[in-house]
Image (cartoon, rainbow, N blue to C red; front, side, top):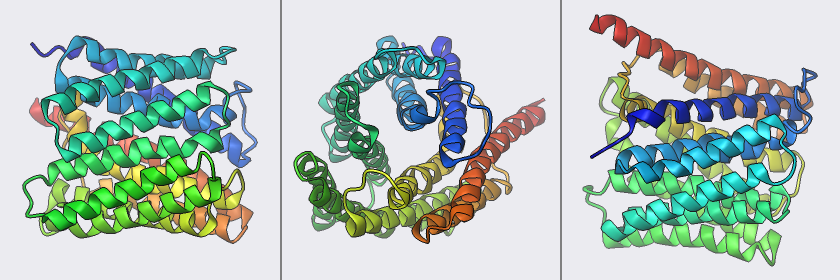
Amino acid sequence: MVIRHPLRFPLMALGMVALLAALWGGLLRLGWDWPIMRPTLPVSHGPLMISGFLGTLIGLERAVALGQPWTYAGPALSGLGALALIAGVPGLAGPMFMAMGSLALVVVFAVIVRRQPGLPEITMGIGALAWLVGNGFWLSGWPVFRVVGWWAGFLVLTIAGERLELGRFLPISRAHRAAFVAAVGLFAAGLILALAAVDVGARLSGLGLLVLALWLLRYDIARRALQKGGLTRFAAVSLLSGYLWLGVAGLLGLGFGGLATGLHYDAWLHAIFLGFVFAMIFGHAPIIFPAVLGVPVSFRPTFYSHLALLHISLLLRVGGDLAAWWPGRLWGGLFNVGAVLLFLTNMALSVGRRRGLSH
């Protein structure tokens, strides 16, 4: 029996709270002189966005798909970790809850891979393992810049595995599947190598990201969906634009290597987490939200507004980073947040519109 209704809404709400707090913290980190609310909020920006929001969302999606009550433990733990960080709870409560949430997702994927040991499932399972490893390092006191590559691996491999799963019935040859494995292998090998040689490992991971981006641009099913209309075309445009940003992140990683802080680090980081990951969210949300929450979402042409704002603002921000142009970086970051808020607004309006039509 599938049980999802008691927890899906409060867990999604936890993820949304983490997202909003992460957005505020990100603006404070950029330099906007706004109320801090909590002194720890700016430094919690990354963990809140990755583990608090995205980790909770992905864990919830998998819990709904499996339909087993125990699988909701993962998103509940990561959501509680986000609340601990937002509240400024001292000590390791936040990182510990998030690490436990990632461990729960690894267990979930162990069950999934045991039931269906295919390449897409294994790829997503490795992504969950990367999240656990990154959280483990973070929990042990490593700085965020040393673990963020593992967090990126969580999202990149999860998304790549999902896309491969959706294209399972496409005529992809063994050689092309081998190229996918090679791209994932290069990226993963770079993460491991970076533990001993940060610069070389980062460049190898960058090469892996670049190869993976080219693979997705060439073989993902989104290319065929461009010929259709409505939501299908919007999703395809979102995905393909995200793959371009993944390629940009690969080039930045390959060119700059291991970075601790600074403008180039900011450009690399947000090319992945905003350009790639949020383009994926924008494209998948009208499909995932109905599946997870059970609420209907109708496509509206205004969806292109938040997608366009995301890419324009990110071009401004990354351009500001690379040119050391502070106003471009500052305003680009502000409009990045505006794009996410516009996305949430458009989604809410599309749900309200669908409900109005149903009455």
